[in-house]
Image 1 (tube, rainbow, N blue to C red):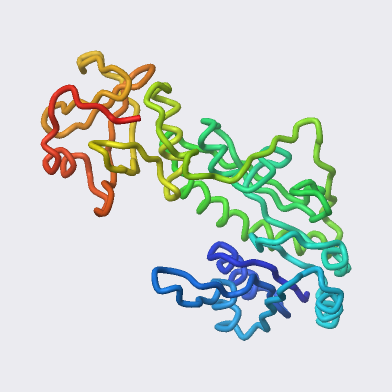
Image 2: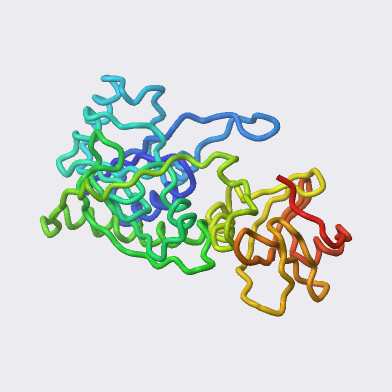
Length: 311
């Protein structure tokens, strides 16, 4: 079984390494190397790094729509293409080439959360169930027939990073099963139910801004949805603070707080009022500083009773 692989970031590199141990990967396609960091040093993509380490030919076309590139791919004779977070739309002249077609790993229960950030939006919405889908690629975004699908439970304190890690681990195994099942004819893809389709957009910095008038559960979901990035944030004493970890408080003995009001309880608990209820901040990161627990923040800031997060 010969596989052609398309991908760019670290999660794609992990899947590439998994598949390369089980199949023959005849090439990988990755986005072009780009300047990164403060010094703008040109860095290879994680998929390119993994491919070189594994001895897999790497292709980085300026335009994936170039007819000459499509001919170049055809010469490898791959049986199936696997696409993981490549970063560019793949044209029909490419995805229709292999005898088994082209498949993609998407971290949601399609047709739910088609689009750029399905994990983050599932957590942000407070969903109890998410999942991962292996689907065929077609000319519409995340709309191809479903090859395999598996549910994943979302715990009440699970972050997007944790959910994503689980989805990728499950997804690697599903990709292997999908490839083998499509090859031997034991898997029968089914069309998505268009009437149930939902879409999600990219995450912008403002999307992660905390509105303290929201409910405690909504703010808690926002914090865990945007962990590890871009991280929820608010202003305190004129400076940006990233809020990394919270929990919802259920304790009638604690003080009633107005939305955005901050209180220290028992010298070690950082409580914040919301539109409905109270949350406790467990971990946060002041501007220009490292992440810290609530006690370190309390001791360093010398909080004054009645202080509030700023809008």
